[in-house]
Image (cartoon, rainbow, N blue to C red; front, side, top):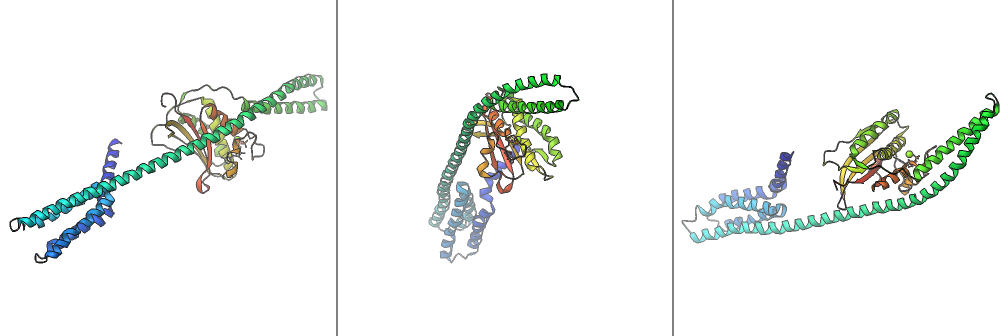
Length: 384
Ligand SMILES: Nc1ncnc2c1ncn2[C@@H]1O[C@H](COP(=O)(O)OP(=O)(O)O)[C@@H](O)[C@H]1O
Ligand SMILES: [Mg+2]
């Protein structure tokens, strides 16, 4: 691995000097000038003067596209191939002319270094600006995500309180109703038609109690028991839990391979995080249901945002996209577009993410590629 990176680095270093462009604008012209130079008769002194100066063109081209390294590589090459021509015939005959040509050769190299340094400095400056711009846009994006999460948390908190109050008020009388119904039921003969009605009555009470219970779960999520854990293990568990239902709908589940750096461990409640990801995975399967095909993919990867380390899970499904103006609303309790949906799944997910100091976001993938939910959890204490 290290060796491969070393070799790649080496190739990267060489590329500006031997790229096709460089060969075309610098090396070949340099060679052509030299061939012409050697073939021009000594009597045409003016032609020699012109040719000698023509070397500056490829040298400058090389410096412009390859910086100091590119410039020097060509200026040294020009110096070497021009050297025999400039000196061998002249040193004995005309030392003054030889000196002049020696200085010209020196100048080739000086021009290459100066032009190259300027180009390199310019390039570094540009890269620095690009890096800064990238950082700025990442910071803005993170701020936007945190902001929308905060707004969502506030809204869910207020709704949670209200829901808890109502659910509580409903649960108490239901309890009494269930008790009295049981007493009545014992008093009625099993074959009496009233008995059947009372059974129905009790079933409905149970159903209401269950609903109230669900509202309470949303409003008062259980305190989480957070321990260091590897999100990849949670993802494996969720993928196998959702597998049966996915297969029934013709949906393939895949866990993307990630070859980069290890995602850091997080402090999390394994059961709650499983519930969170399972909710999202099931929504994904439901979004693709009825088509007989589709892919639900999970990937786990590390990310740095605002100088902090995160472990992220991205869950994608290639179903229909969510209208842009509904992207935030889907986290609201009771928001549902399904017959028989509760609309509580994602609001519970959001609360769990919040309890973990995490960020849960959603986006439509470009070109109708589906929907992607991303959960980012801060790296555990040891990894931060
Ligand atoms: N992967 C998805 N693709 C498209 N729409 C989705 C997806 N996940 C959630 N939604 C939308 O968000 C709504 C709320 O989801 P959720 O809170 O889990 O409640 P429910 O599943 O009971 O409808 C869904 O009804 C659906 O409209
Ligand atoms: Mg759901």
